[in-house]
Every structure is written in C-alpha cells, then in structure tokens.
Length: 226
Image 1 (tube, rainbow, N blue to C red):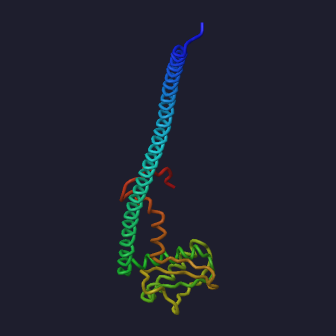
Image 2: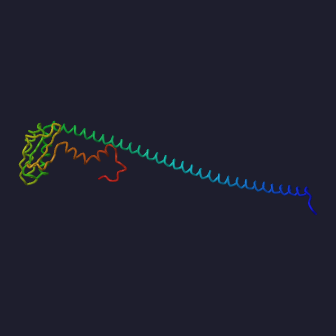
Image 3: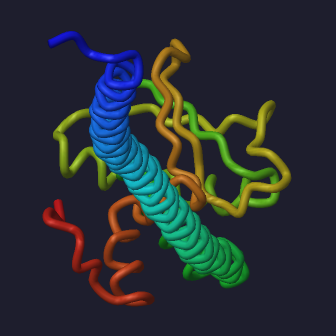
C-alpha cells in the first residue's frame, strides 16, 4: 500500500530526529573524551612543571647551602689567619724583646768578655784555618784584642793546631749591631757570623715551637713535633 506524503514526511522527521540524537550523543561522547584527555594532559603538564620548579628550587637551595659553606669556610680561614698573625706578631715581639736585652750583656765588660771569648773560640773550631780575621764593633775592639790570646790557646788545646788570629781594624760591624763577631778566612771565601743577633736567630729557630707552646699551648691539630 503506497504511503501518503504525510506518512513520508513523518518518517523523514523521525529519522532526522534519530540521527540528530545520535549526533548529539556522539558529540557529548567526544566532548567528554576530549575533556578527559585535556584533564589528563593538564595534570601531566602541571606535574611536569611542578617537578621542574621543585628541581629548580632544590638546585637553588643546594647552591645557597654550598655558598654558605664556602663563606663559612672563608670566614673561618680568615679568622685562623688573624689568630696566626696575632700569634706570630706576639712571638716576634718576644724575640724583639730578647734582641733589646742582648744589649744589656755588652754593658758588663767582664761578662761580655767571656761571651766574646766563647764566640771566637767556637768560630775558630768551625773554620779550622791557619789564618783567621776577626771583625767586631769598633767599640769592642779593645775587648776583642784582650781575649784573642785566650781564644787562640783554647783552640790549640782543643784542635792541636796553630792559628794566627788578626783583628780587622779597617772594617767593623754595622752601627746597629748589638755585639759579637764575624770571622773570615784570610782568603775571604769562608765567613762565620757569630754576632749576638745571628746567635739569637739560630736559637730562635730551634726554640720557636717551644715558645709557641709556652705562650699559646700545644696545637692539637699538629701531628708531628720535629
């Protein structure tokens, strides 16, 4: 039986409504899927950026911590250097005081003569030369001349050798020298400094560790004492 135009139109409208409903459902499904994928991607990107930010600030924190350690180490080293400088200055002042007191020895002619005798005798035994020139301060010329015979005798008794000792009256020790003598071979090639300053420096080199211990106590960080 043939359909009327009204029936045809009705079926077409029904089919169009069905298609539209299917399309709407499909669109909603696509939107939901897109929303889900968007949220997943957004979450992934947010997490990724959050990790990057955390990593950035963690790195910054480590840099700050490292900088603090470096700064603390530098300040500690500077403080140690200042302490060492103050200690060395104090030791130097002690040695300077010793140098100042050396001059007191030369004010007692009897005591100073004994010192000169010992210094000259020691120098002769170090040189072991047949001819030696002694050089002292101009102010000490007579004292040196007086002790030379005894020094030569001491040398002969100790070494069994003869020696001729001459006082240098053309050249003297510098004005600032505290006392003592320089001893030179006749050829001038070998020289021994037995001035009071040189003897003090020699003793100071040996005693500075003991001086430091006496002034500041033993260094607990030092492993070796020789």
